[in-house]
Image (cartoon, rainbow, N blue to C red; front, side, top):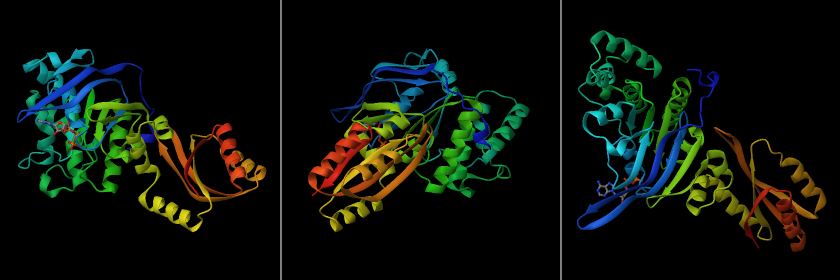
Amino acid sequence: MGAGRVPEFRSDNTLINLQHLTKRFSRSGNEVTAVDGVDLNIREGEIYGIIGYSGAGKSTLIRMLNGLEQPTSGSVTVNGLEMSSISGAELRKARQKVSMIFQHFNLLWSRTVEENISLPLEIAGADKAARAERVRELVRLVGLEGREKAYPSELSGGQKQRVGIARALANEPRVLLCDEATSALDPETTDSILDLLTSINRRLGLTIVLITHEMHVIRKICHRVAVMEAGKVVEEGDVLQVFKSPEQPITKRFVSQVTEPGDARQAISQLGEAYPDGTLIRLGFVGDRAEQPVLAKLIRSFDINVNILQGNIAQTHGGAFGSLVLQLSGDGNAVREAIAFLHAEGVETEVIAHD
Ligand SMILES: Nc1ncnc2c1ncn2[C@@H]1O[C@H](COP(=O)(O)OP(=O)(O)OP(=O)(O)O)[C@@H](O)[C@H]1O
């Protein structure tokens, strides 16, 4: 679909504004605050990710963006229209412009691919010829040519989600909400669906808001991210910035999902055991900043041994980031001075372990 050739459109205009958004549920006499005073601005044309563990309040929050759930207090405004204050026909109309895809696709099993995609057009009252034309376009857009007459039971998970995406785009929404849209898919299919969402974002300038518990999804396609914990947004920012210097403990855990795969962590701890006299440090680097000269200077200037234990680099929408794990060994003072030197050079440096 050539996503890379289409220029990116992102404006500074706020499309979605959440103010002190709160949702409480009462369940058998107990009150649960699912969303707790959230303030957020989502800009037109961006892919905005909300990440959190199970129970953090993500689903409740995203369901308030299209009026599937009503806030207990606070407001949701989409393109100047306060979703929390409308109902009935007005809400149904507004919902056509804020459509949604789901983890389990929510397709109608008795309808074919093209009949599923056509459904929102039927509901909106489009005539038969216009529906057929639009369905053809959408089938092409999501890459399902040749599968129009298939039933959902005959499709792979990725194909089912493509039908979900086509159906969600039928009435030309301004916003696409994705509720754990890739959580039921294997890693390769996840990547192909994320590529499709990126491509749609670029081609149509569509604003996408997604919720997930996987940092890989955030890293791969989001421009900005909010981290949710116990109903609150505890950290928010550009994806690259959050990867570079996560502040909250929960954000650090999410970032380490991507930067420190389990086997790498194990390898580091094994190396740490093999060289117990060393100090393990992790250097963080971002974009095109050159840490290499700093490393060369470190090795030249201090009488210590430097072993590179692990290095990785990953791409985000905003650029590359990576980390390098080093083992420094030698005289304790020299090691301390070397670390002070790295700090002074402005390299993000964290001591992981020392003897
Ligand atoms: N309809 C409901 N009635 C009562 N409690 C609810 C309801 N919906 C959500 N909750 C509670 O609100 C809290 C947040 O749930 P929510 O589903 O929004 O979190 P989540 O981050 O999306 O987690 P998950 O990924 O597991 O769905 C949880 O404690 C949940 O049990």
